[in-house]
Length: 294
Image 1 (cartoon, rainbow, N blue to C red):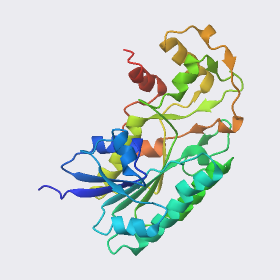
Image 2 (image 1 turned 60 degrees about the vertical axis):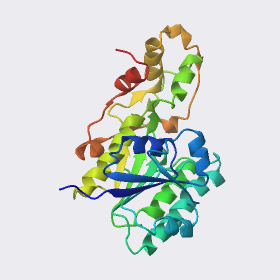
Image 3 (image 1 turned 135 degrees about the horizontal axis):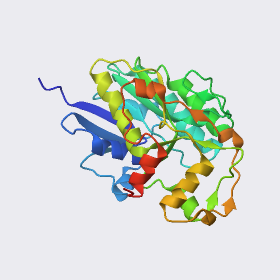
């Protein structure tokens, strides 16, 4: 027996949301993408055949209620700041979480699942100890403080609310690290500054995994760390990339010091225990695919 087609609403629908829509079975889901100005998404070739674009301001509870009045099975929030300032972060996360929590509680038929995409930036601590979902977050800057505040606001918005904290996302169109290597910049070897990454295809794959398993009656955890299986010192990663891109080690001539507070090792055990299988379990697999290395 065929299951009824479901409605997925993606608020703050940008690159991640549009990619996700393209991966979903269109016989199973109708995808609605919400932005303040949907014309921007269309101008960037976010395919209208996969996403039904809608205009709305996610900082206004009345806009969210209006959009969801005809029903929503899954609501996903994938916000990014319009400017990288405390005010920009507050608008993107705290204001939207406040409005969304209010709107969802007012709905006669709330969604079966709410997924709130957050960031491992909430973990400001460093060192060699592994960090997992049971580790208390200790933000080390306004970004982490605001992300954590938004999680607190949204965490009980509907009975099945799931927060996913993604590590550094890379993949097609997300090549900041490759640009640094091309420019000859790298982190110092000591002390090791651990980097945690996840390929964008695994971000999308894991979000769809949560949606589909919960649809089948499984109850997700309230919180997941989304990362690959191999934290790696940034210096080691950059030297591997340099060789993979055809450079010699001498190409990386400029050492750039980054905050030691950013060095941490994240555990993805809970994500894997949910049954999700990573397409790219480590940086070698992910960047080899990105660079088209056999």
